[in-house]
Every structure is written in C-alpha cells, then in structure tokens.
Amino acid sequence: MTQSPDNRIILRAEKLTKIFRSGEEEVVVFADLNFEIRRGELVTLVGESGAGKTTLLHLLAGLDTPTRGGVYFLGQRLSEFGAEGRAAYRNQQVGYVWQMHYLLPEFSALENVMLPQLMGGRRFAAARARARELLAEVELAKVVRRRVGELSGGEQQRVALARALANQPAVLLADEPTGNLDQRTAGRVIEVLEGLHRAHGLTSVLATHNLELAQRAQRTLRLSDGTLTETVVPEVH
Ligand SMILES: Nc1ncnc2c1ncn2[C@@H]1O[C@H](COP(=O)(O)OP(=O)(O)OP(=O)(O)O)[C@@H](O)[C@H]1O
Ligand SMILES: [Mg+2]
Picture: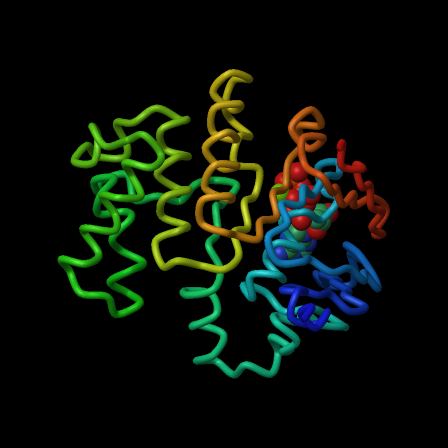
C-alpha cells in the first residue's frame, strides 16, 4: 500500500501573498506563491537580502498572517486553527531558529533548552533530561551550565538548534542560522543541523544567503522579485 499523497505533504502554500503597508506605501514582498514541502525533505530557501525569506518562514511558522492565500499544515489551514491551536502549532509542531538567535544570554544553555518545554507543560525533571540529551547531541555536553552569553557564536547557534528541537517538532525552520559565522564554523553548524534533520526525522526549511550551503540540499526554493522558482538536484545513483 502506498501512502495517500496528501499525507506526505506536510506544509503547503496556496496563493500565498504578503503585502506590508506603512502609511501610503505598500511593499508586496511576494504574491501567489504555491509550493509543497514533503515529509522528511530538507529544503533550502535562497534569495537576496530583502527578497522575503524571513517573511516566508514567519508565515510557515504561524508567527505572522498572510495578506491573501494560506499555509496548510497536514492539509489544515493555519488561519483556521484559532488562537490556542496556533500557539500549540508554534510550540509543539515547529522548531524555529531565528536569524538573530534570541537565546536568553543570562541563562545557561540548559535553561534555554528547558524553557520552551516548561512553557509547553513538560515537568521540570523531564525537561532537564531532554535538554541535556539535545545539548549532548549538538556536542555541547560540557557547557550545559555556562551562561549562553559566554558561548561562542557557533556554540550559541547549536544551543538554538537544540532549543528548536526541545518539543520534538515535526518541522524545523531555520533562518540564516550561520549568518554571522565564519565559513568553517558555519559548515560545522550545518553538519549538526543535517545530522539532527536525519536523526529526528524532521522536515526542514533552511533559509540561507550561502549558495554553497544551499546547493547541498536536494531542493532549493529561490525567492526573487516576489516569485518563487525551484531547483531540484537529481539524486545520484
Ligand atoms: N514589518 C514590516 N513592515 C514593513 N516592511 C517589512 C516588514 N518586514 C519586512 N518588510 C519588508 O519586506 C521585505 C522582505 O523582508 P525579509 O526580512 O523577509 O527579507 P529577507 O529575505 O529575510 O532578507 P535578509 O536576507 O536580509 O534577512 C523587505 O523589503 C522588508 O523591508
Ligand atoms: Mg531574513
């Protein structure tokens, strides 16, 4: 038996349009985007600065609402989730790595990874155990007690990855997670991300300026002039 095609499509955008208005001015970031993200895919999202990568990730995460069109998670339109459903979607189904990592610098790595779990209702001991496990997975077992503000940029991004996975999300959205890192450190963060993607059976969308990095993915979505084009690298057999 094959799975029904719908079940394999975890995220879908239909006629997705975002227009920002400030006073008289209108910025049409993109219009009528249609695309599907299938379960287990790692897709990269590229485009020049201002092309709309962050805007698109925010819409996929339910952090912002489209002007027209919609985002569907497993066939359900996010705009129909209601406030509670949307909060649960953001906390439980989506792991988000911000362009600026937004960790709490005064708190330890461990506390940063525990926080979203406690907010989601997990008990303290369980949250701590999972946070330790995830931090070990991103090779930060030795610094779990260190304040995040004292960690290096690459280490902070690995904490951010661990935090994004704290609540076992189905989807990982990462916005330029290597933006401020040197090439070597960036490469390391991406290896960790790819490892987590596989080990946790994630569906991941990774926005990046770094073309070399983008080309490692099988599928690349490119935003430019408000439209989306797609490149698929054929699998080598
Ligand atoms: N809240 C907002 N109000 C008005 N315009 C906005 C707002 N947020 C983003 N924009 C505009 O939307 C466009 C897309 O911005 P976005 O941040 O999505 O680009 P990006 O591709 O992530 O860029 P970068 O690579 O620099 O991070 C830009 O022209 C930006 O100025
Ligand atoms: Mg951005």
